[in-house]
Structure formats: structure tokens, C-alpha cells
Image (cartoon, rainbow, N blue to C red; front, top):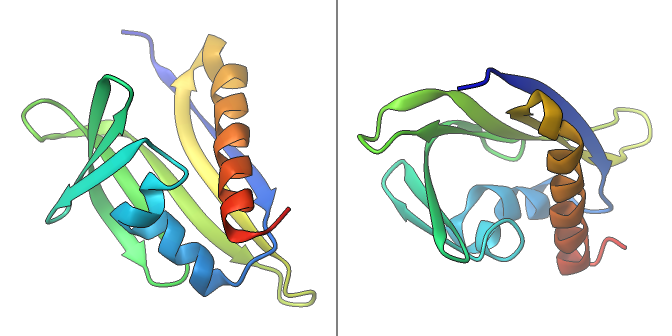
Length: 130
């Protein structure tokens, strides 16, 4: 299996950090923009897109600031890959942005970035940040 590379993208979002946090940290919030459906059992989240399911463990969260989901294998053991959604607030301007940290195969980073851009666009429409 090819080694995946880490990449980061920052998206300005016109929203309060508290509202944004609800959309990145709860199954109901995530299912509105990130996946077709999201279920959770304890710390495990199942992300459903069309006919595929991926399972992740909520590895860490800091209320109002960030969430980190670690992808798990079929035995619910952590893999080395994760995605993190981090809410950044500029101290001077109070501008809010969402930092996405994710992994993709070297030759698929552009495609993965495009996918995040589409998903974040859906999120912005949802919270009225367009």
C-alpha cells in the first residue's frame, strides 16, 4: 500500500465558532455536509457515502475548537491515518476559518483537496456563510 501524505487546507467561514463546532463534532451535523449519513456508538463514528462505509474513532476533541477522527480498520484498531477539523479565530479581526488536516495518496492530493472544497462549500451554504 502506498504511503499517504499529509496535507492541510484552510477555509474562511463566516460563522461563530460555536455554531461551526456543532457541524463538525456531532453525527447530525456531520451528516448534513460531510457524509450521506453518520452514526455513532460511543467514540466510534460510521461515515456512510452511497454504498461505502468508513469507521473512525473520535481520537480527541476540544469544545469549540477542534475534532480529530482516527480511521480504524475492520477490527476497530486505529490506523495511522486521521482527519482533523480545527476552528481558527484571528485574534485581531475575529475572522473564523476551518483548517482541515487530512491524508491522501501522493497522486490524489489535488482530487482530495477538490473533494474537501466541495464539502466545505456545502457546509458554508448550510450555515449561511456564502
